[in-house]
Image 1 (cartoon, rainbow, N blue to C red):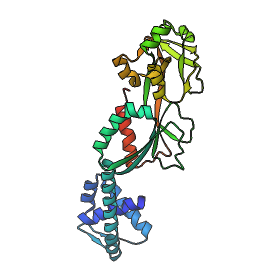
Image 2 (image 1 turned 90 degrees about the vertical axis):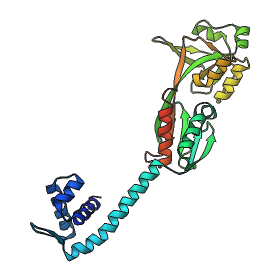
Image 3 (image 1 turned 60 degrees about the horizontal axis):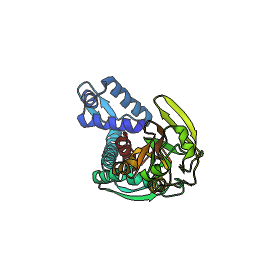
Image 4 (image 1 turned 90 degrees about the horizontal axis):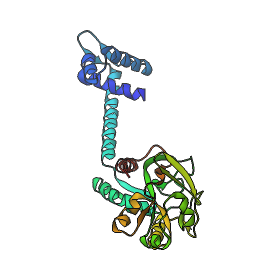
Length: 293
């Protein structure tokens, strides 16, 4: 890499026929530039330039080297420019796996905006909560809620979702409204399939408690959890954004409004840190837009 850099310095010196002017154009000390060219000549084993107090001339070997290097340096410059354009306006197929409920509520409007910003990108979305093998499956990025199950992947945190307790007016009318967390033991609690489905962690004003709960329903779909809550089947822990529309319409009510359930982090998982421009831009865009989720 240093040899390529020295080639570029040599080309610049020859173009302006002056170490001083080349150093000014490159923004480096004249002595440093001279030392780098001398090092290049030593590495090649041939003198490339005749230096006098009045002018700078190419040797025969220098002329041959310059003709070759000029094309190489120009190709490198064009490659960098093209990559810069690709990074600014990436293109290609972006394949993303993400949870259906999070995608519908949080990501759909953001994806529409992102697609408008980058018309060269096409999309293939797999809406599923299953564990995806990024090595063997054709997926660029996986979006998942909760702490990553494996440390083999690169996890980039997108946002943290605030969660609360919700139930339908019909359920609360029939079974009563809990007044304190300990009342939840008497209620039908709709449980998301987690390592500890029978425990809810609730917090308020500097106090955090763990509550044992029970219920007939345990499942792995937030959307189904929400629907069961709307159908008077029990109390559910939902992200505020997912419950917002139902709360506004009156289909759901906030239960124990002074208490928050434990927040849940959302991650973008990739196989490697070195990402194509399309994937890099997508993750950066979501991180910026999901800050206040």
